[in-house]
Length: 356
Ligand code: NAI
Ligand code: MG
Image (tube, helix red, strand yellow):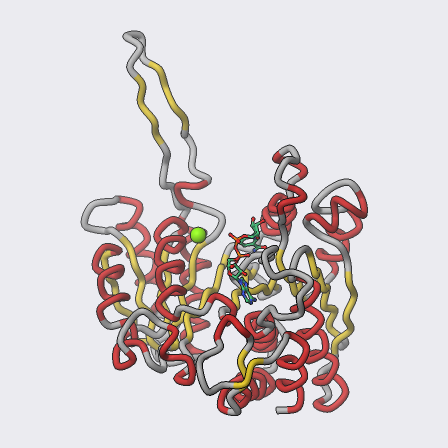
């Protein structure tokens, strides 16, 4: 059956990088039998320009119909003065909540060819390939009660609630084990069970789910130790699964281990494996329209789409290998360029990947 992919270029460099990813998808369709059809719609600032809101009704409708969504990036200085409800970022949050995308996958990969981009020593970080799975719709960012309370004597307190339902822990844990099965079969669940009851429940439920995945080696780690270990010896990890706030912090830290924001993809999945795929970077208004943006994070997002939604692991491996090959060939967009390499633009890089 033909799978539907909704392409949302967005703003800034979004259309430039998404054009290269679409090029790749079309090549896979023509030469490798990938059975997909692409449709494009506006979101973010482009949605505001086209339909007066960042998530136009028609775009949301198409997103609900689609099997997978490929997003560029949203936002830009032109939209900074709009009311919150009209801002480009609302378009993204709207998609995440409307589609119930609770599992956020953030790989941190350091290509050996780019080891000098990292702030860490090559022997610590060279060849890094880990996956952080962050729960995206629960925890402190959504828990109630929340607020700032003024007491009778005029002093104030602020409070939030870290709340997780058993079923929320179960489904993210299950995703974690499933992803681990597709990778190195090791899962580290990160919590703060020495202090937080919500973490004790988290740990209990993760242990229960583990019984369904006897081939995955499960470990637990406290979040403070995990932060330390990510910087000290990041290659010890395969897949990390954790709650919303811990994952927010750890995934940003892990991404920066590699030093190249233009190289990192992400996925946000629902319970059925439908997903939205996007680079972790933003719309880069400082370089938009110049044809120099690095399309590899978006191209690697296509690889994730092939692996996690379209069930085409062989094609995903092919794309990963093609990216590695163009790096071997010495091709570099300006953000990852170093002495002795060949500087190329967005389209040249995309063409090279398709050829590889
Ligand atoms: P940014 O990620 O857009 O840019 C940060 C720096 O990295 C800039 O110097 C940029 O030129 C560079 N960069 C980013 N992607 C690159 C690529 N593919 N190739 C080469 N260089 C790249 O973050 P910033 O500047 O904080 O935000 C710019 C806009 O993007 C804002 O409106 C922000 O709200 C939005 N944004 C959107 C996100 C999304 O759509 N998911 C995520 C983060 C920011
Ligand atoms: Mg963050």
